[in-house]
Length: 309
Image (tube, rainbow, N blue to C red; front, side):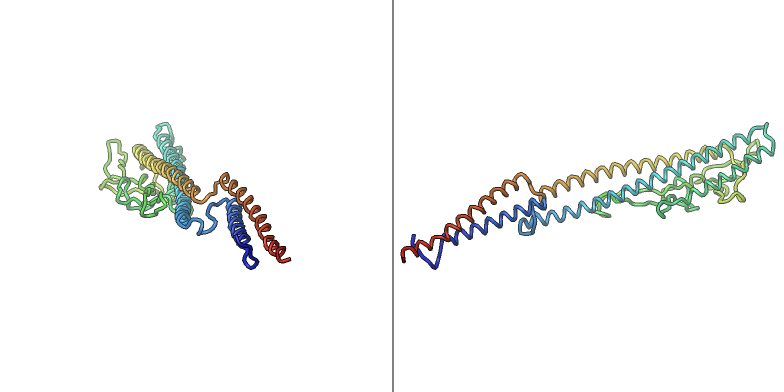
């Protein structure tokens, strides 16, 4: 190997290796300090693109999960109101039974009737309850209980694909229709009015009163009214429970999907600390060795000076 002054080949090679080792050392430090394997696009362009799509899907999944939880809250509030309605109908049925006691005076029956009318107004108020400004019930006065064509449906999307994905249809319960009946003009042998559930074509619609002044009297309704009304409310609660159950399974599935997406994204983006700490030690030693070798290589031209001296 020739001895030159203008070009120090050994120093150039040592400087190149020092720069390369320092770059790798800095990259290892960046990865460990950030916790990410990919700190810039050039580290893994394809992996970064996949990670961006996975991150977007994870964010959408979190939003959908929040929507499902809101729908669950809607269903819970709706069921609570239905339970309250059932309790009111139970009490009205109880008052009706008390009023049929022949030992009761007309004044006693009148007292029962006062509470009976008051409960009607309270039952009517339940039909207009809302959850965060959204009506809990379908209050269309022309809707008939059991008529699916008049159902008001709220669609809850259960995947991050939005309308293109799966969804759960949540019905706004027809509480008004459940306690709305037709009053037939035919009299039975004992002279009592006969009531049948809404959906029949005979008679005049008998709807809930929104105040005590225009409420139905306790003597105008037969016991069958309350039996059917409770059956209708029970049906609404069953539908509510079925929807809530489906939403729970949809949320569980969504959470599992999100967990798997996070794991997939982690495999792409997160640094392996054990492997990277090994690289850090490796390039730290190489960097120091390269610096020491470069110092020695820079001393080589001094040999030429000795020959000239």
